[in-house]
Image 1 (cartoon, rainbow, N blue to C red):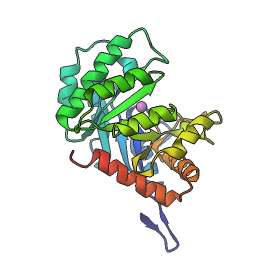
Image 2 (spheres, rainbow, N blue to C red):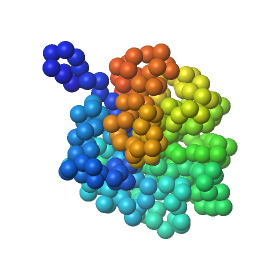
Image 3 (cartoon, rainbow, N blue to C red):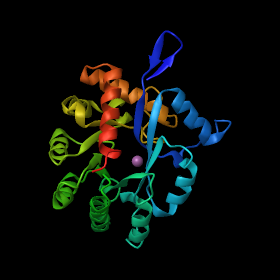
Image 4 (spheres, rainbow, N blue to C red):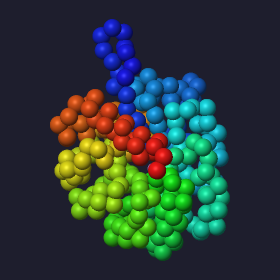
Length: 268
Ligand code: NI
C-alpha cells in the first residue's frame, strides 16, 4: 500500500494479463511510459505482459525491459498458430529472466475450429515446455472445454500448473480446472450486462485461486466500454469481483496479489 497524504492509502492491485505492446498510447505525451506511469499512479503494482507470437516477442521485451515490476510471458496464441516451426525459438525466448510464464496458449473453437488439430499440438507443446522450464502456463479456452481438459489431464502431474485466463466458462469447467490445481483469472467481462452466469461462477471460486486481469487493450470493463482498455482498469474488475465475493477491495487486492506471487514468482 502507498500512503496518500495523511488521510488514506492506495490499494495496490496486480494486472495478471495485459498486452502492453498492443496498446495505442498516442494519447499519452510520452507514450507507453506515460500509460505505465498512469497505471502506477492508480495503484497497479505489477503487470504481466503476455506474449502471443515469437515474431512479436523481442519488440515486446524491448518495450518493457526497463520496468522491473512488469513481467512477461512467451507463447503462441491459439488464434495465431500457423505451424509449429517456431517452437525451438519459443523455447529460447521462454528462458528469458523476465519471462515468468508460458503462453498464452490453449484452444479457441469459437473463432477458429478448422485448425483444431494444430491448436492442440501447439497447446500440448506449451504444456510440456511449461513443465520442463518450471514456469506456469497461461491458458485461453473458448468453446473447447472437453479438449482443453483432455490436454491438461494428459500432462497433469506435480509440475503442471497455471491459470485459465479471462475465464468465461461454466462452474463445471471451473471446478475441473481447480481440481487440476489451476488458478482462474477474471477479466472485465464480469462487468458486462450479459455475464450473469459468469458472475454466479465467480461467487464460487475460492479466494485463494483467483486472479484479476484486464486483457487490455481488449475487454474494457463497465463503465468504459467502447474505449480502449488499460491496465489501470484492473481496479474496476477487482472492485466488481470484491463486491460479488462480499469482501473489501483491500482484501481482494491482497489475496489476488498473494496468489499472483505464489503462482508466477515462487519457484516451483
Ligand atoms: Ni490475452
